[in-house]
Image 1 (cartoon, rainbow, N blue to C red):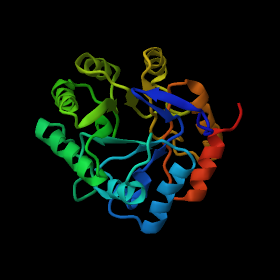
Image 2: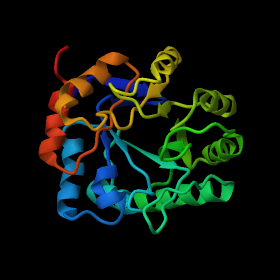
Image 3: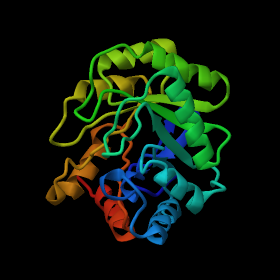
Image 4: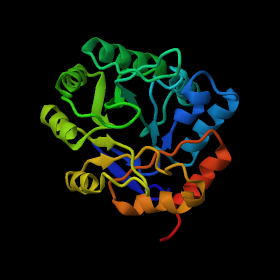
Length: 257
């Protein structure tokens, strides 16, 4: 059993620590370009694994390609039991925007880009990123999710999830193939997914909140601890480029009520 706050959660066929690590902040400003301190970024990733974290969240769009290459440089060959979860469905433009890329050919290319950058034969978990920078948007996910389900049948993806999704899109995705997690924005200040979290917990599906701190540093300790207590299916992926801050986050998440 993990000694990290929150213990573990069965994410499909793999048990992962509920306290994970989000690699987005390892890229440069605006999630574009390399970090100012590459050696420091590699050290943070190794420290996360040394702490016992077994769930790292990334995307080949971060940088682009920066965080995946850092993860490979720091951790490959990957320790047994480590899940590197990634996202597809968006790319980057020259201005740092996040244009959607969900056509079948886009998704296939992104899956292969992630495989190549991470040095893997199969991706442990792929989340389909929906909506846009402003949040979830209504619309069918059938074509995109069927493409990922096909890649899963080919053996290139082990498990599937959705990100930035509406309840209707989650239901549609589940009608196509099983999902193991939903990754949406949720924190103390933005609790619009309360009912969804509870429904997913009953079905054994994880909920992974991004922006878990809501940008408010003074409430950071209670915010992380509150999320872990909120529901057993909530998995945390706070990000940082500092080993000291990583350790502070772990300590904060372990605070008693």
